[in-house]
Length: 297
Image (cartoon, rainbow, N blue to C red; front, side, top):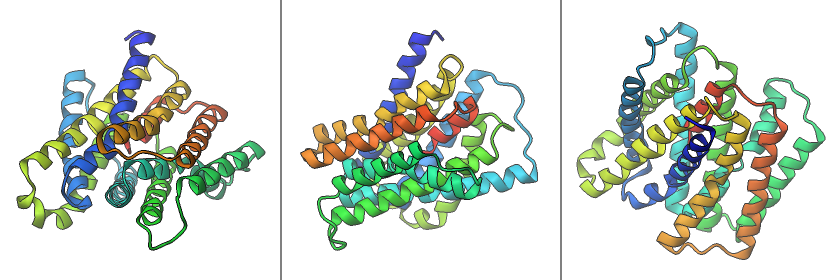
């Protein structure tokens, strides 16, 4: 893969991640069924990718790895559930922008968990995200769907941040694709008791949207991300993936007529700027860790 094709693959992957909210809204099913189906289809897609890539023997899990993957899977399940609840309540645009608050949570939590000093530019990042979220919310009435949906989306961002930090603490021991496959397997098992009773009532068309969500927005997008990191720096990839909210909002605008107000657009710009600043002011993560973090959404 050349740098040019790798960059193209990154943008395709970002577009696929941007489609996450769109497919979630198209599927007329509960959040638990959507997440269960997404995880199950993702496991199949990642298995196929591993087989086609003809990688070496599978990494043998230790007890520590199993505990880490179990925690990651639970956090990933909560992240996806809260995100799709937000999509159903408030729409794709608000859900995507609320989730994009995760860099601010990461800065704060890294300082608390890893005892890292929070630098002045990181305080600016938190401020940008906070102002952006204030602008994205039309009103602060807890009874309104927009506010409720944004709170679910922010919870999704918090859980994604915790997932990323757990991956950071346990990265480097297994290939990212294999780790993502095990995490998705945990998600499917966690959601099966909640989704199982309603699976027979899911329409074929909804299974199509869920299948596309699992295969393309999870398995293929993650595989493109990991493959491109063999050529492109992780920091550059993170900047490209800052385009995900742009793709998601644009597609929601075109498909669902979710026309963003000027205030929402300004808030979205501040949040996206914060994502880019966050990716540039950190030292580039290891490829496997970066790919694993991206796979979560």
